Length: 253
Ligand SMILES: NC(=O)c1ccc[n+]([C@@H]2O[C@H](COP(=O)([O-])OP(=O)(O)OC[C@H]3O[C@@H](n4cnc5c(N)ncnc54)[C@H](OP(=O)(O)O)[C@@H]3O)[C@@H](O)[C@H]2O)c1
Image (tube, rainbow, N blue to C red):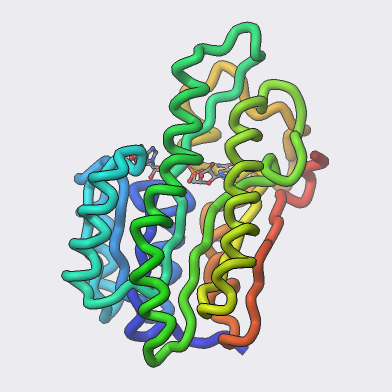
């Protein structure tokens, strides 16, 4: 049975596009108030307006670079003050650059580490005390969901080198926190999508992810991944769905 998210407060990073934006919509439809985090303020403001018009809950935009630990801590403090609590953190912000190691720019590797790893550490560290305190409240549970990747379970092929490494890193981090925080009623979840049609997979890449491309049925939609997030956090509080892998049906690796 799916529970509603009425009166919960969800912080979603990467909310300006793709999976993060779809997740913000999905959680708001289930009753959550949403704090929308990313760098592009105009995109966040438009989404906050849209959600506020379609749902009864509150939606507020916070422009922040998740790689900036001090800025993230400030924003998380503002969110807790503006909304009164933080029940759910969805780590959706991420970047991906696929290239053979011999041709790769070190700056691209660093950017993936900064956003995909340090970004997740920064937001999770800043949110944890709020989540533990929310888990003591009426809902009796709190959630951290990180959008990892199939590339965090196994290296999907050449050219996914550092992207895959960053996703392995957050998978390890999430599992370690799961072992620490279950007793405090904070659930840790990983969503591991295959190929999804978003800006990440459709704009400006010299090399696409090296995987067998789905043909007839196409990639996943951001909403498919958002549904998986919603499923994870609407279980009864005794049930923690810690990991969901979701691929396009035709994707082989
Ligand atoms: N698309 C796929 O096939 C796929 C597959 C598996 C996993 N994933 C993962 O899914 C997550 C979402 O990606 P997506 O596919 O939805 O791509 P997307 O549409 O490009 O969205 C990426 C989001 O991350 C935000 N972001 C990037 N750098 C940031 C920074 N320094 N600070 C704050 N926000 C930042 C972007 O917002 P701003 O640019 O406005 O800051 C944007 O909202 C990522 O973690 C990605 O690795 C994607």
